[in-house]
Image (cartoon, rainbow, N blue to C red; front, side):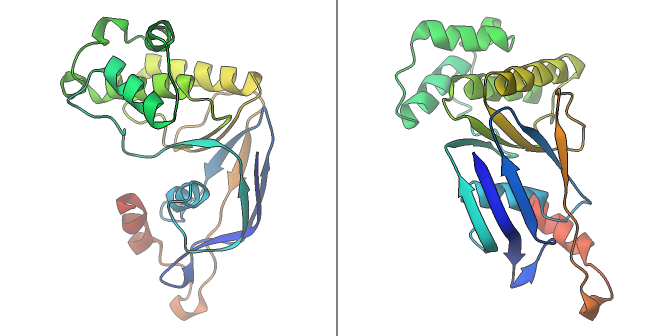
Length: 211
C-alpha cells in the first residue's frame, strides 16, 4: 500500500529529518512519533502529494488524507457534506449508507444541522463518518484525536481497529498513543546540522503547524 526509500522531506533546501524507509501492508497501523517541529505533518502531506519538496522514493496506493482542517462546508449539514464529498470522489452513496455512517459516529440526531452550529468534536465525528464511506484502503491521519472527548477517542480507536481488521491500513501522527491492536511506531529524528550546532526545531515547529 505504501513504500518509501530514503525519504527526506525538505524545506528551503534543508532536510527536516533523517531518511525514512517505510512499508505499509494491509492490516498495518503505524503511529508516527518525534519531537515537535521534526516534520510529522510535512511527512503526511508529502505522502498525500501536498508537499513536493523531498528526496527519495515514494510509492502510495489509493489513500484518504485527513489533515488538521476538517474539510467541511459549515453551511451544509453532515448529511449534505457526506453526499458532497462522495460526489467529489465519484461515488453515488445511498441515503441508507450515509445514514448508517452517521449512526456509527453518533451523529444521527444532528444529521441535518448546519455544521457551523456543531462543536469541534461533533465536526470531527462527521470527518470520521466520511472515512467510513471512502473506499480508499490507506488512511493518512494527522492528529485524529483532536477535539474528541474520551468517548469520541474510544470510537476512533474502534473505527481504526475495524478498518485494519478489514484489510485497510493506517498511518497517523498523534500526540495521543493509538489504542489499536498490533500497532507499530515510526520514530523520526531530526538531522544534525553542524552549522547550527544541532537542530533548529523551534522555528520549524511553528512552520509545521502553519503547513
